[in-house]
Image (tube, rainbow, N blue to C red; front, side):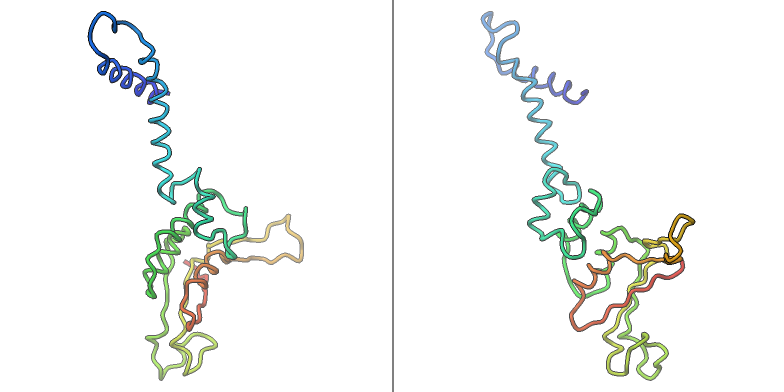
Length: 197
């Protein structure tokens, strides 16, 4: 590797500069043989520095997940890619919390959704039931809110190799829905909509 070879040379020069001067110390010495080992330690330390960030961790991801209680009931063990695990871990460790729209949008961005919006019904007109969500009453509409996903979110369309009793089309992200349900205020009712873009 070019980086290790460069580090070998740098450590070789460093060790030679640290050696005492004089004819007894000229030429190659056992001390200089340590340069490759020091270069490997240096490279390994750089690799471990990347492990500090949950969004980049590879070697320590299992430990980070154990500390954060992941995988949880939202995601069964063994069904996520490394990138998905890193995103979920990053969202969990860096969340600041708060009952506001930006918090939930940041959680969804961490799961890979950039084009998601949230509709809050607390500002709906109490005298116009048509502005309330389906199923809401005059006493409950203000406790509803809706997460609007693009229709393409986890879209699965029936193909010619599917069974005749298969759905023509299914969509929905159970992981994202579970994460939102877990973090939503307990007095609210969350709806999920998969809308055409």
